[in-house]
Amino acid sequence: MKTFKLVPIFLLLILSSCSSVTVYSDYDKNVDFAPYKTYAFFKPGIDKVEISDLDKRRILHAIDNEMAAKGFTKSDNPDLLVNIFTKSREQVNVNQFSAGWGYGWGWGWNPYMMYGGQTTVSTSTEGTLYIDLIDAKKKEMIWQGEGLGTLTKNVDKKDEKIAEFVNKILAQYPPVKK
Image (cartoon, rainbow, N blue to C red; front, top):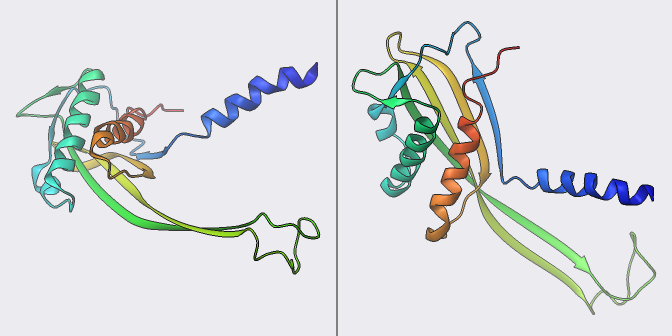
């Protein structure tokens, strides 16, 4: 009977660990975030980001949606400037598996290794998106969010993936003071 009580907890742990985006944030602990109500994009910084213009527009659109959901208004005279920065790196994964018959699991020589050994190589691109919030009057960064996850080249899934990155990053803004 105890086993059945542990199954839902185990499934919850598995599902919560399957999030494809890991997020972090940092902020100035001396800043009161309550007065910030308007924002604009920091064009000089965004122009320097080395990704396609299509992906830039996807990111900016997702940020617009999240900021609006948080009650922010886009303005020509903003309280906050929003800047982005991206990084990516190629991941190579090599998996070796032997399904041959032999002397059991473990280390050692398997005379049947040639009948069922398999090696697979796969690649993926891991990307990092940084979202910086800058006090427009002081020109000082007050908050930075970082999202790390696997990117997709599938055009149909890019909007969804970018929205997930931005949503999870901005979910940490404003920071909860302890």
